[in-house]
Amino acid sequence: MGAGGLRTRAAHTALSAALALGLLLHRTDLRRQEERGELLQPLVFVLLVLCSVLLYFKVSLMDPGFVQPDEEVQAGKTEEQSMVTPPVSSNIKMRRCGYCMVKQPMRAKHCQLCQHCVRRYDHHCPWIENCVGEKNHPLFIVYLSVQLVVLLWAWYIAWSGLYFEQSWDWLQHNIFLITSFLLIVIFTIVVLLLLISHLYLVSCNTTTWEFMSHHRISYLKHSELENPFDQGVVLNLWRFFCSCHLTAWEKIYFHRDSEPV
View 1 (cartoon, rainbow, N blue to C red):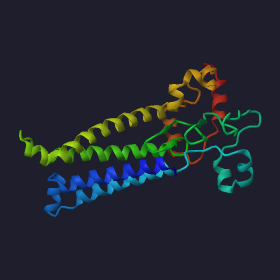
View 2 (cartoon, helix red, strand yellow):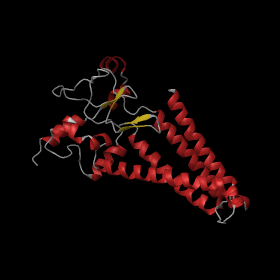
View 3 (cartoon, rainbow, N blue to C red):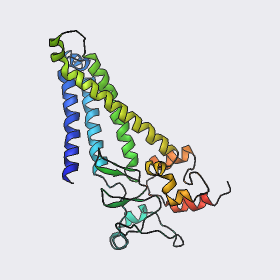
View 4 (cartoon, rainbow, N blue to C red):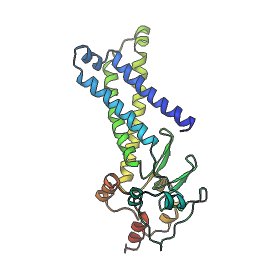
């Protein structure tokens, strides 16, 4: 873990803890419920915040789908890994990455920041200090969903503690809640837009990289189909969220690309 990643993850954890603790200590609906002995909602809120932080660390620290060098794959592949890694026909030629010289499966891309090629590369996320790829993309969307629920609930809690008066004392007394409210609104908009865009891309079986660089990617630019990987919304979502195996995208590409349009 690099120093930059350590600082980013520490900042995320500290900000989440500070906002949650502040909302519990100020005169919000959550605090009033706690004083009345109604502990269910405060407990659920704290557990939800904890769940979002744990998901954040899981997504940021897990392997996003790094492509392994040929010699490592052949020498160190376990039985479980053999089942997970999809076989590719010997007739299909895989190009070598110009940076790390590994054979790149289709839809993989080299990340300059991670110094690895990533399967079904979506983007490098600076907030999690990790790539989003084939292995951690589904969990990334789950994390965004949980984070959105936490933010919407926190927005309501912060609003419940605000009472408006035109005085300097009032502003000093409520400066934390006002700041928290504004931060929560900003984060909510960002997370909501991210979640909507990723769900749309997943339903089409495309990635952020492919969507933004369609005209520069050879396997998309030379395909007769607009999106050779699209198998319909239901199958796309099923393959994305429910498949336990990596996908040999070359097989889908050459099968779909040969179909009459």
